[in-house]
Length: 190
Image (cartoon, rainbow, N blue to C red; front, side):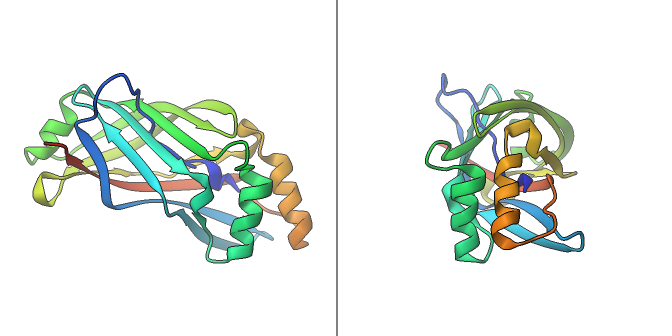
């Protein structure tokens, strides 16, 4: 249930005022697989983020906004997996090359390996994901993952929560590695 992953998020340092803010449409999705052959897509309804002109980026994921399509499952994931009473959000922070956002705003697409830190469930892990940064309408910039980020439950102390969900749902297995994808739209704060 690596959903937490990206659970995600892009969290960027708050020491500067962000000049780019996350806007619609933006999505963060993850896959969960149970009993070997049943894979489902989930997302978070509330994500926020910013990128400063210096490239300091931050993505915040509200884990209480998990949307699996089944309300009781959302409640169980919040309570037993994410433990949102103690860990209500996940964040991803990174530094994007300072000129990348400007180039995209000026119409230049580019790819790069985005390296940062995922903070989830009280743990932190280095993450690297290839992304494409492209221009969009109205001087917006879209950053999208080119490959899924694989979130490992044991890296974030989520294994016990997955076991609890397995027991409640009477499942043989739930995958402990979750692929996460994102498409994030940023607009310039003028």
